[in-house]
Amino acid sequence: MNIQLTAAARQRMQNFLAANPQAAGVRFGVRKTGCSGYAYTVDIAERIAANDRVIEQDGLTLVVDEKTLSLVDGTEIDFARQGLNSMFVFRNPNSTGECGCGESFTVDPAA
Image (cartoon, rainbow, N blue to C red; front, side, top):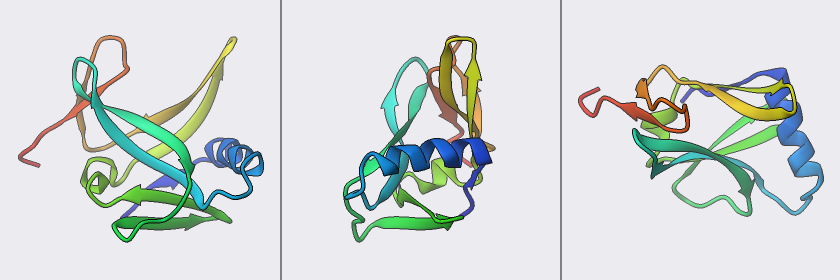
C-alpha cells in the first residue's frame, strides 16, 4: 500500500487533528457518487477498525478501509489554494477518467 502526502496536505490534515485531539487519525477513502462513480473522502477517523489499513507518515496517521484500498493505492494527496478556494488534490494512477466537473472519477474494473 502506497499513499503519499505532500507537505501541504500533511499540514492541513495535522490542523484537522489539532482541532480534534481525540481522533485516531485522518480517514481517506471513496464513496459512490457523481457522474463517473466515485468521489474522494477525507474525514476525521474516530477509531481504527479491524479492516482498516494504517499509514504513518511524518507523525500523521492516515486510515484507509481495505475495501477501497485498490481504488486509491498509489495516490498522491496534495492541498492547494486557488484564489478564495482551497481543496485537497488527488493524483490517482488507478483513475481511468473523471467527470467534466472533476467531482468524481472512474476506475477500470478489470485492472
